[in-house]
View (cartoon, rainbow, N blue to C red):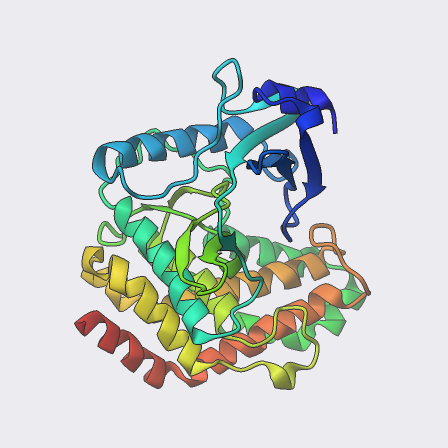
Amino acid sequence: MNTDVIRAFGLEPASFDVQKFGSGHINNTFLLSGRNGEKYILQKINTYVFKEPGVIARNQRLAAEFLAETHPSYLFITPIPTTTGDELFHLNDEYWRMIPFIPDSTSVDQADTPKQAFEAARQFGLMARMFHGIDLHDFKASIPNFHNLTLRYASFQEAIRQAKEDRKQFAETLIEQFLRYSDIAVTFEALKTNPEFSDRLMHHDTKINNVLLRKNSYEGICVCDLDTLMPGKIISDLGDMVRTYVCPVSEEERDFSQIHVREEYYEALMKGYLSEVGGTLSDTEKAHLFYAGKFMIYMQGIRFLTDYLNGDVYYPIKYPEHNFNRAKNQLTLLEKLIEKETALQAVIDDCLKN
């Protein structure tokens, strides 16, 4: 690492040990540990994913200014400015930022207990409640169309038309199965412009490792990794939690018999999330809380299958059918979720009563 980066934030490089940090795959993240016990997180932003790093910085600054006025005690991680007062340091086409290290904190890569699911979901719900009523006019998308299912579905249809014959034939059954659930995309198209389903300031990447927990108790501390903080719908954050918390295995699992919906985890995340944000929801949002899981799982599934049909140009693969199996994994999870709709909707209804 160029020592000028560390100096840009007013620190002396010789006084810090620098190590790779965390399990994230997008940005390069480092932990700076000082001789006197001080710690900082230093990140190089992935400009292939985030074309306009300035948008990330601006969104976070606007959010922080709103919270300073409305909820000053809320823990919102904001970047440490450079010596010239900038939120980002730009050097050789690289963008760097520094953020505080939160003491006594840890993160987990998967939900191993319902309590972890509850605590993480509660933090995302708390953040959504803190931002309720914020003026979104000056916010921009850090990744345009990130959760636009209409666009993803159109790309899926185009991929079917353009795919090489061998791939299309191999995936024929899976394509038909996903097309059978096209009503999920139709519902999104109707919701997009529904005034009762308005935009909120959403996180958009609510995997459990984007919440900091207390090391020993696993109680929630705060949300982290705010690069995708931007206007969106409630189904984005809730749906991503359902997709990644309730199944005991990830989208990488090829033994599809291991894919199932853990109802106790679903109940925990719904209780955590709705205990904070539930009072701010419109009737239309409440009516589509179960849909959130279907929305996110279906969208991720067709993204994997689209990439397979396009020749694996987006998601890195480790073997030829990798994206195909990821898509089949997500279809299986979608079907398992729908099988339990009656029981899971009852869980949601109970949460909304409390």
